[in-house]
Length: 143
Image: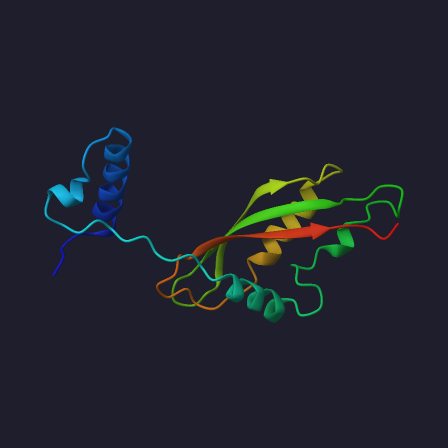
């Protein structure tokens, strides 16, 4: 039975990354331990299933109404990529942060709406999969 705590496990991962960059052997392997396995990515199919379950008609967090700032004279359009973190046991979104955005016209209300909206979403619990992934939302106008 392993007696490593989460902090010592993350410390070993960090030490392994620095050792690899420096061209040195993996410290876990040198200590006779198996290197830490990377979890498999969260499945794309589960992400799409979460979009349908949480927002069946729009597949986005309810921010389409913010595209039109002043009718068609000023619109917020572009791509927003959000990093999403899930609770491992429930699949509830615990973190949502904007990674990239191409919205240039007054983006703050739109980005806040997206991240706050995603915090109300729940996905399939990740189990052995990585509990984080990125989602991209595309906003366009009808003008």
